[in-house]
Length: 373
Image (cartoon, rainbow, N blue to C red):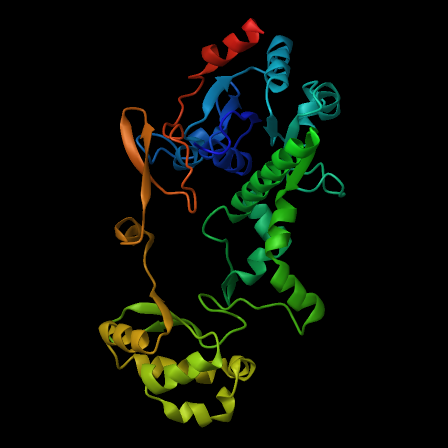
């Protein structure tokens, strides 16, 4: 049995962050009712890659129930209030102030329903000066400084997925689980808020600490590690790129003795420890690069495995689907079945999280509950 069986969630959501949160809830067994405007969550239109549906929407919304409400109509807003009153959790990520303009006040909801857990997802925290600003993933990557440490030495870059949105959804999910546990002990709900900026700032703790208390913030170094050497991309004789990671002095010794047969580096003053190697990165990387350039990737694999070193090929995303350690779950999209990456560490994955809803597919079913009540 999934551990959130019996938990009812109303999610007035769009895009990525809030749907990422409610996705985890539905996978854990909760009933998630996704409230959509008549034209639908705009993420439905991001692309048509998966059986004519958006890749974002397919990934984030399997197992949810889609209910269409026109919240420009007062009677539809009242239906939303009634649905919330029958639920354990209410999630929303409308632009700042939009919920109140609809006449739905969170404070009033909590006064009327003391066990309600609400989660508001915003760009900036409600207790900060930016609370009324709209925000999106790439904007937060830029404003937080994440983009300044991402990319090549010559140009900042975007992380290749919507990292800030996904992080925010995960933090919101964790906060809701905590509130459900606390409610089980106290009988009281909770008014929660998670912001995109707080989420990415938390994940930037190490660069922040290095900048504030250390010598300087990390610099962009491309596909390499700014604080560990050697840790980056090297190329075998056959042209196969791979990433090598040396984490400690034992591994450095094994690399020199077994991996690349360069024991002379062990006595070189430029290689005595990791901070020194970082200071002489060009020399160290050049020495390793020259050595592996004489080896086929098969030889690299054999030598590095014998030395118990960590390394991995640099693959195109197209190779993910055939990787022997890649596992999937099946999801229905219309009349088609597609495969999604499985959820890590989730043996309790709900069997109900297996179909992507058409727009408004569950409106009549769900609104019948309001009429009965």
